[in-house]
Image (tube, rainbow over all chains, first blue to last red; front, side, top):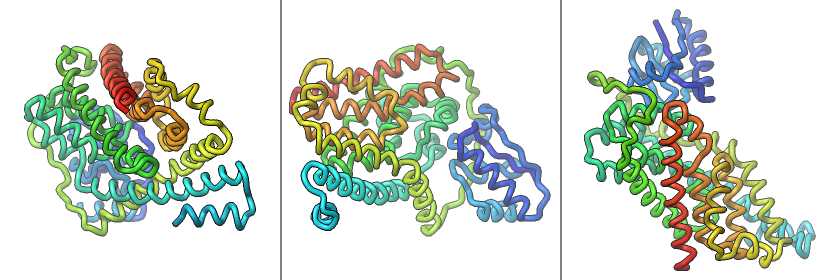
Length: 78
Length: 314
C-alpha cells in the first residue's frame, strides 16, 4: 500500500503527515508513506485544497486534517 | 443583560470607579461578548462550509461566461473555505480548468475579504447593517476588480505553464453525516478561536484604554478628519495587518465611536483582509511582480473609492 500526503508545507499538511504515520503504525498494515510537495504533481491529482490524502493513487480526502482514527478507517477500507 | 451584569461585577463587586472602572467595564463586557459571538458565528459559517469545497466550485465555474463567472466566483468566495497557504494550488487549479484569469482573481479577492473571522468580528462589533455593507461592497470590488484584471493581457505574467486537466478527475464522493459535519465545524471553530482569542483581548484592551482615557478630540484630530488623505493612509496601514484582523477590528470600533469616519474605517478593514501581504508573497512564486502590482493597485483603488464614497455621503 502506498499513501501520499499532498501539501506544500502548511501546518495542517505537516500535522496530517504525523497523523498518517501514527495511523499506519496503529493499523498494523505495511504502507509506504510519501509527502508530495511538488505543486505540479498535486495539480495532477486535481486537488486544490491542501492537505490531500491519496491511497494507492486514489484521492480520499482534500482540505481536511483527518484524525488518526479517520485515517485508520480509510486505510482499512482500501 | 450582560452589559448590566458586567457593570455590576466591575463597579459594585470589585469596587472600581471613575475612568478605570469605565475602561475595565468596557473591557470585560466587550471581550466576553465578542468571544461568545465569534464562537457562534464561526461555527455557523464553518458548518455551512462543509457543503462546499474548492474542487466542486471549480467544476461549477469551468466553462461559465466571463462576467457571469466573475459574479459567481465572488459569491462562492464567501462560502468556500480558504486559507492563504492554499492560494497557489487554487490559482493554478482554476487555470488548469481553463477558468479565465479575471474570474480566478474575483474568487481570490472575495475569499479572504469574506473570511469567517472578519465576518464574525464585524457582526459582533458593528451589527448586521455594517456587515452587510462590508460584504456587499466587498463583492462589488471582487467582481469589478477581477473583471478589470481580465481586461488586461495578463496571461503572460503567469510564470508557470499550466497544462489543461487531463481526463476526468476522480475526487472523493463520500458525503459526511450531519454528526461528522458538526464535529468538523466544531474542530475548525476551536482551531480558529485558539489562534485569535488573545488578539481579541489585546485589541479590546487597547480599545478600552482609548475608550476610558483618550479624548475624542484627539482621535478626531488624527484619525477622524475628513481630510482627503485619511482614506489612502487607512488603506496603506491595513496592508501589513492581515494576521491580526481580530485584534485590529475592536480598535476600529472604538475609533469610529470617537469620531473616525465610517468610510475610512471600512477602507481600513477591507485593506486588512483583501490586501494581504503574506498572500502577495506566496503568489510571487508563480506570478510576475507586475501582475501582483496590478492586483494591489486595482483593489486598493476600489477600496479607496468605497471609503471616499462613504465619507462623502454619511
